[in-house]
Image (cartoon, rainbow, N blue to C red; front, side, top):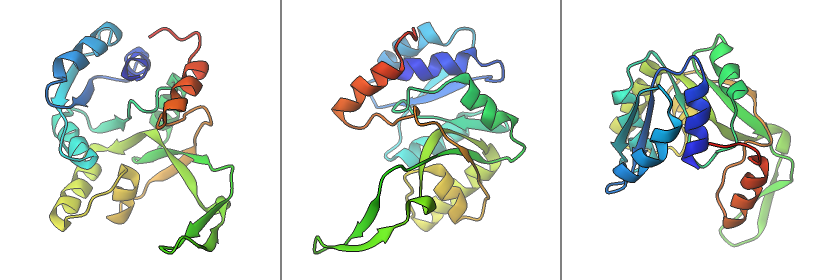
Length: 194
């Protein structure tokens, strides 16, 4: 799945470098997957951190740009327009957020429904996201200092007072989480050759 995102990023005229993480022992395999799709864009493979948050902190240290675009291989159905949407926006920290089209509720520890969650108040946090690298690094440093772990960077930034602009996401920008998601992503990517 990483090859799709790399191909889209490498084809974008404003992407200056591609840096990704790989688990220990998988760096060379990751390099082999990326190299055919990176074109002339320099790329680097770093060893993954102990957590997603630690992995992102390592990527930020290696980045040589003022602005970074974060993405994840689990969302292969991106396109250049999504990157344009982020880069063209004047806000320094910008993310894509999709509406959640189904009903939700809170369930207590006892297994009983405790409250509805209004779906017009919650959104699917999608990637890619654009950040001012210095802002994001500062927020990561504070989270490390405070011993806090976040599963996603716009929430980390928000927690530490950095504003993140929400832009409309795309329904096709699914996160491949379950085995059946591979088939859905395959249908969405039909005709795309990474």
